[in-house]
Image (cartoon, rainbow, N blue to C red; front, side):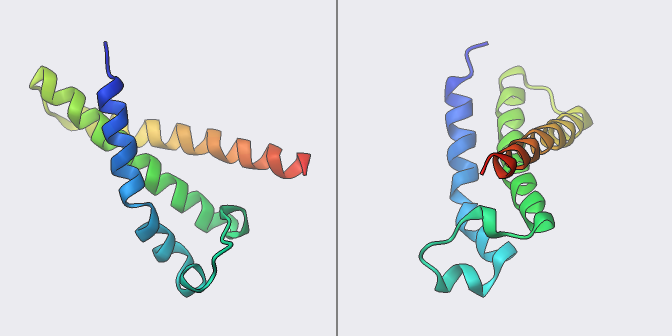
Amino acid sequence: MNTGGNHAFSTTFSAFFRLKLLQFFDGKNFLTRSDFSIYELPFIRKILYIFSLVFAHHFSLFILEVFKVSFFSKIILLKTIFSSIFTTILCMVYFFFRKIKN
């Protein structure tokens, strides 16, 4: 399948919500600082932030794929949840190894 446009839209969709999610998970600290880094977030907030972005990306991606096939069911939600969990775990492994390296 040629899904380059779907991935581009889904990435843009999740990037659109990025600032709002950072404000939600970091609160006022994010608004007052110009040198914010995701590495400074507490572990649980970092997981929730990444999961929210990944969930938005995967959900919009799978919805676009389904509209092509014209089939909608609970499978989309399950695919989105499991793909988001797996991707979040991979991101956390990346953050863990990056922390050890520094």
